[in-house]
Amino acid sequence: MTTTRQRPGAAEDLRQVALRMRALDAALPRRDGVAVFNRVYLTVTEELARRGAEGRFRDPRAASALGTRFAERYLTAVDAAASGHDRPPACWRPLFQQRRHPGVHPLQFALAGINAHVGHDLALAVVETCTALGCRPDGLEADFERIGDVLTALEERIREDLMPGPDLLDLADPLTHLAGSWSLERARGAAWAAARVLWGLRDADGLYEEFAERLDEGVGLIGRFLLTPLG
Image 1: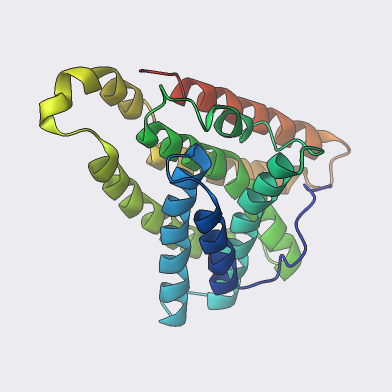
Image 2: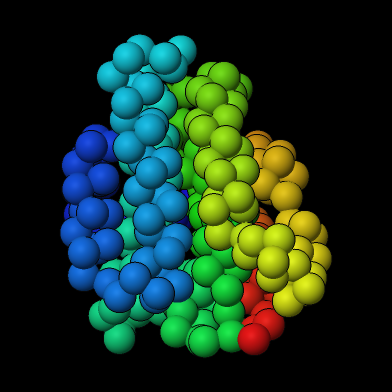
């Protein structure tokens, strides 16, 4: 089994990861599509760190490891896009390519980032965490669900904050349709199923890499639809 190359410092805890996201937020224009998602994800990371400090995970060490490896996949994609030499995974390319498009609404940027991160990165982060800790995915399931609950609560707030108000309802009809066609709950379920499949394929010659590549491409295709310019 091979995994996507990670940035140095993959063992950093969630608070350190949040510091890196804050630095990224300060460096990016506010309307930049990556900045929109980064603000969303920074809130998630800070909330996970807070819950971890309060002992609200079944296995705080495993939950922190999963949350950190999960975040590192996003930050690795950011570095790849910024370097000009490495290509980010296919799931992230639509967001990086469309990040400055004036016809894409901030809600679309947020959902496209969540789609890439949950749809692809989360499954691989589960497998990497299990490999590092010497456990099976079932051992992470309870904390996987707790992390997912944080994401779901945030998604609801994102839709409330970023959707246009009632006075713009007519203009927002295509956006409402597009946003309603994607579900974080379904993406979470698919990510867990993909993690279990990947775990079963980890020793199968070439099959792990092939499945991971197809997952990456499929999630990227969904991202392209989510980022359809509406303006």
